[in-house]
Image (cartoon, rainbow, N blue to C red; front, top):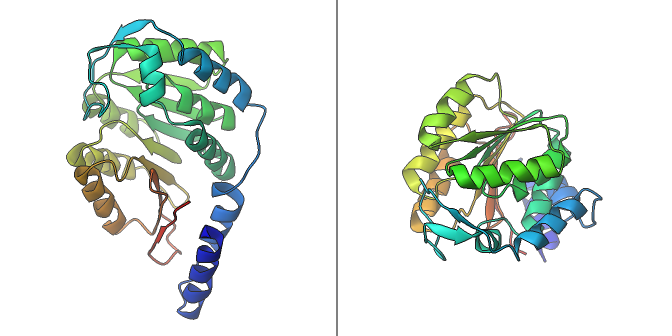
Amino acid sequence: MINAFLRYLFRAGNAHGLHSPFVFELYTNVIRAKGTEPEFADIESLRKRLLGDRRKIRIQDFGAGSKINNNRERELRDIARNSEKPRRLARLMFRLVRCFSPTTIFDLGTSLGLTTLYFAKAAPNARILTFEGCPETAQVARQHFQELRCSNVETVVGNLDETLPPAVAAIDRIDFAFFDANHRYEPTVRYFETCLTKAHDDTLFIFDDIHWSPEMEKAWKYIQAHPKVKLTVDLFFIGLVFFRKAQPKQHFILRG
């Protein structure tokens, strides 16, 4: 059904000079792609182990918190179940990284590091900065990066309001960024604006949980309307943002 819908958009847009073969190819070759890569096995084995891990850590949360479990002391299995991206979305992230071959990746919201590991395995030569507010969570994630031999990941620990600006200022460009740190309007927009200063024509930003709350809906609408944003793809759970200057401003909504 989605494929037919996209073909319709492609044909209708072409009639008005607004066709997007880029989106059609992205959908066909990346978003709806199937298959298992050998890199997935170790990460999913780790996920399975974490889903049974009853060790507890103390959570320090600078964001909007969890809708499911806001206890300050939580078992790793609860974090793995409720805070990590599901396998389907993590594999999509892997394919997106593989497709666009970024050399600098910003991962805003490490948690236990499973999604970060998908980034690292998809782009083993990229520099990945992953940001986590909670020291104990970050320490567990570091152990996972070491265990799976992902030496290209740098973990930045602390309040993102304080750690993100100097990290962005210290680099020349951001090729890929995943925003999953603070599910509130003002911080989401501020982090977007901060990272935008190092975005370029081929940068991809991904925003998690764009329909999670009215505040995230508002933030997503702000991002879509931003003059530097040329193309967005709403996949319901995540939103893709592109800055391609030659691209007419368009917004796509795709549902599975």
